[in-house]
Image 1: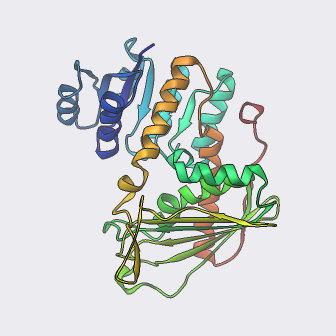
Image 2: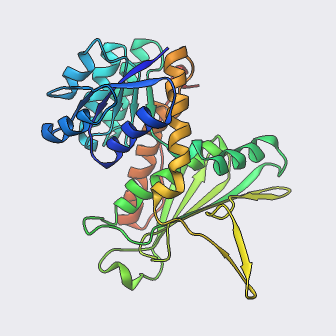
Image 3: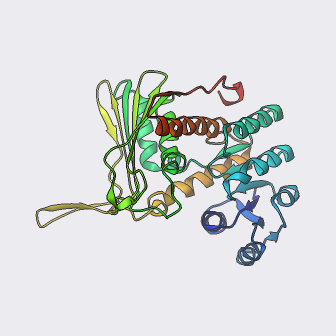
Length: 335
């Protein structure tokens, strides 16, 4: 079965997903696209193998009978509208993070999905599909290192654009680490603190780096370092400390070179280089699930939980105090 996909938003990530769906993966075809810039949408549609329909807006694309499933890559504040419309139409929808820009909007999506009666939404937390993270999850779940007591998570960027704010270090950067912590430890966050180390002078007025401390319901502690002007490369690290051992991600490169009394590993240039394989696996598994009626990956609840924890962390950033995290009751649909 070929899943006919409509893509809302043809910016950098949207175009990359269209490339992926049409030239890398099996079982999918892109039959519709739309964007606020319709000229850009037309240009992308002209490059799709076999062509794709250009729709004037996202609702029109969702209503198209030639679209079986929807990918939302548009501006964050539009996500709620399009995800809700896809649920109403009964069509599976892959939404790049954030699921929505407020906790309340995420809750409305959860309520709509629960009312529909089955899961239709997957949120784009691609780290869950990375081979190294999956290997780390396998070790944790096996019990080989005992019950986890701590998780150290590091998210470093060589630089960030001028519009990047200190809040984005949490809502745009650390949100991936927050999702990974919940997934790796199979637990929810109940409290958060944010500490401000000595500022990196390369970040200008930006408060960078940040040190975020999450308290998990089961008692484990998670520390997240965001360091977004460190220049040397895009460096993602993670180590789970258990009662009887530890497990950590390998280095970013595929090989380690030893010469001239030195050891060197390649540090990825950016997130695309580091996680391109994870995106491929993520979308292939989503397509397979849509085609077979199987189980989707990160859920609306995961998107909601990330929003709640991020909001609490932003509050902690401003106040300097511990902030409690209250998620409320988790619907049975996501259990």
